[in-house]
Length: 593
Image (cartoon, rainbow, N blue to C red; front, side, top):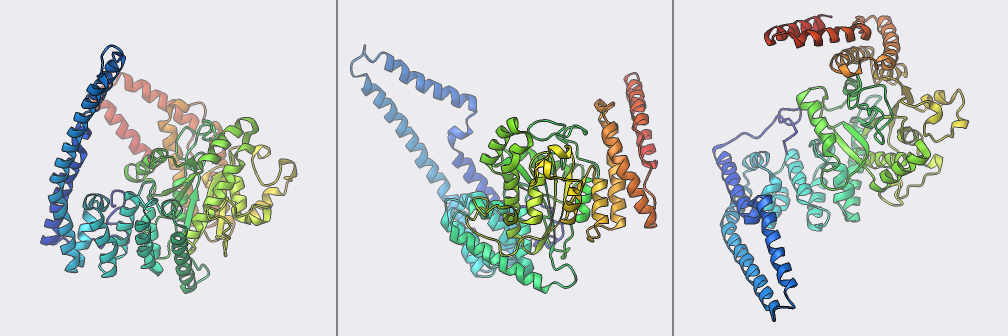
């Protein structure tokens, strides 16, 4: 559970203390689970893939040979039948021996869990749940362990908010969709939480750094409509109570930032079907993007765990984490390795049918082919917002595919434009009582206005069209300095002058590093440099008017690129020790500038 959640993060600092009994119990459970898993794997699973393939090939060749000579040999089917009977007996014998081997350690595991719950040892139980893989513990211990952790521990009041989230996460990883018993247990866990504890539990479910999240839990894993309705009704009722308790102008728990990935978080460099922005290197994060996400991530209760960064993707979910793993690998790199992303995000996938149809339609219709993808993003946003009614939302996208259409629907509502709540809403026929509060939508311009997909046809968009969109909270930008400026000038209170300066200064630093490291882009930086410089000059004026320290000087790409060429040429003929010294000197001078 804590693989990608920092145990020392806000809300998770109170890790249960280790006692002699709890430490010994964790060690025993780990040993027993490893023992059972090693036996459960079986001889075929432990066998190398090459040896297994050779064994199966021999078996099928044996059958084929005797099938071919069947006309020549009488009663050959008896030989084949005996062969399969012997093989079946060997397998049954191995299965019986396996069951005998795992019986004792499984009973010991069940006994250890039962002893800690029956004696009401809350602190020791918490330490065990924080220290072992609970999903593996349930897999090894079977229904008895599931029942003790899912029912007895909850009924006896032995579980805190984090421990409830750990067990729900374990049920999700064990599989919920086809097991109504586990779905009822998960419902009981959510109904047992209220207020800010329920908000914390939802955020913990989202903050795991993998494709298991609250959205998947409610809309995919919970297949029983009655159970799903119970959970959503409880979430809505508790969120309404929280909203009524808040004071001040903004009655909200915080702000959730929803963002597209391609051409919004990082550039696709025009690789179809990902995107169409060719002004920035492939898979490079746009300068200032992550810093703007950070300053918008506002949470009322700073001590509660939160996952307020959500990526809304058109890539569909297929099987386990096949489609999502590439994105989560990037997120883990940005959070753990580069330390650039301030929190672990979660991701909401697209619809397989709409994504494939959009891809095929776009080959003939251009951006118009992505209409269903854009509408489905709006639907996904609406369904996600139903899980977090106590939050407000900000959306980031681009105008290369369906994000602009989705943003217009988010800002104005589907009914105004004739979209029903349809298959469009995962709950067919269900209408939202209160639409989600979208504070702003920011659209990265990567295509000319006449080519983009919007609710209005290109011929109906006059000179005042963008102004009308801004009045509804939808802003266009060419860089993330420009996006920060738009939010600052909107007087929405989402960003201050100090935060604008932080985003702009970070964007300049990011851009300088990108130019330094992307040597293959020597002659292609000019278009993006001009866009960034234009927004930089405007930000400089705002910061000067606010009486803040001026931004660092804008980097001159034409000077940086020749210097890179000189360094590369020098490095070829330079001893390694001297090269290290030069690199350190360059880093120092860059820090000074």
